Amino acid sequence: MTPRKSSGNDAHPTVPLASRDGARRKRVDAHPQVDDPDLDPVERDTDELQELVHRLLELIGEDPTREGLARTPLRVARSLAWLTRGYDLDVADVVGEGLFEEGHENMILVRDIELYSLCEHHMLPFFGKAHIAYIPDGKIVGLSKLPRIVDMFARRLQVQERLTEQIARAVEDVLQPRGVGVVIEAYHLCMMMRGVEKQNSRTVTSALRGIFRDDSKTRVEFLRLAHGGRNNE
Image (cartoon, rainbow, N blue to C red):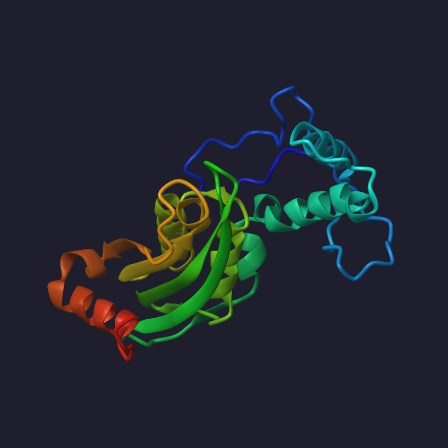
C-alpha cells in the first residue's frame, strides 16, 4: 500500500489514497493489456473501482448487465484513474532536468494552456485555459514544463481557486523568480448542466506573487498580455 506522493504544494495534508471505508488504491507495475483503444492507459488496479461503478449503475436504476453497459464499469474506472493521475506525481516528476541557468530578466509568458479538471463538489468537469508568467532571477524552465505543472494539479479533484494558487506556488518553488502571475479562465459543468444552468458564465481566478503583486506596471503588463489579442467573447 503506497501513500500518495506529496508535491509540496498541496492545500491539504498528504494522506494515503483511501476511500472512506479505508480501502487504499493499489499500484501495479503494469496493468494487463486490454485490446480496446477506448480504454485509458493506467497503471492502477481498478477492480474495486469497477465494482463501485457497477453498483452505482444499479442505484440509479440501470441494468449494468445489458449490452450497452457491460463494459462501462471498466471504462469509467480506467477513465477516473486517468483523470486523477496527478495524485501520483509531484513537481520534481514533471520538471525533471528542465531547469537552466539564464540571465534573462524580462517577463516570460505562456498563454492559453488548455486545462481539464474535475470539480471536487460534484465530480463534474471544468475546463478552460491557464496563462502563466514569471520574471526570472537567474533560472528559466523549459516551456513545456509549465503546461505539465498545470496538468499535474488539474488531474486531481479540484476547485479553480486552489488550482490557481497551487500552480503559482509550484512555479515559485521551482524557480525562485522575481515574480509569478497565473490567471485561469474556466467553464464549469456543475453550473452549466445542473444548478443555475448558466451556459455562458466563465470563472476567472488569479494568483500574483512577488513583483507581479507589488508593482502595478508589471501586473498591468501581465494582465494585458494574458488577455490581449482577443475579440470580445
